[in-house]
Length: 116
Image 1 (cartoon, rainbow, N blue to C red):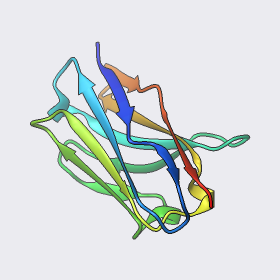
Image 2: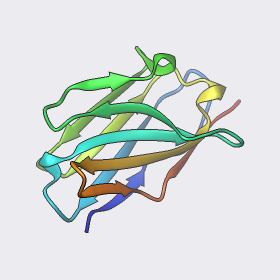
Image 3: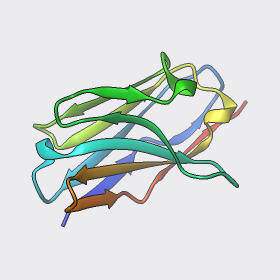
Image 4: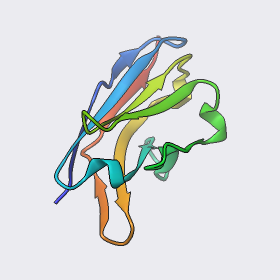
C-alpha cells in the first residue's frame, strides 16, 4: 500500500517562496505518475502540477512560470517549488500517486497560506 506524507507548508508573504515535499513509501516510486493538487476553502480540488514516471511535466495555467515540480526517485520524493506566491495560492496542497488502475493514493495535505 502506498503512503504519501506532505511537508513544507506554512505562512508566507505575497511574493515569497515555499518548497513542498511529498515522501512516498510502499510500492515502486519510479513507476508512479505524481501530482500536486490544491483545494481552497469553498472550491473544488484542482490539479496544480504533474510529473509522469518519464518526467514529463504539466502545470495549470495560473502557476505556469512560478511553480516547478520535480522528483527524486532515489529519495522516493516529489517536490513543488513555489515562487512569487500570491494570496490566491492559499489552499491545502495534496500529493497524489497514480499507477495504471492499481494505485491512486493521496497524502493528508499541507496548508499553504499566502498573506501579509
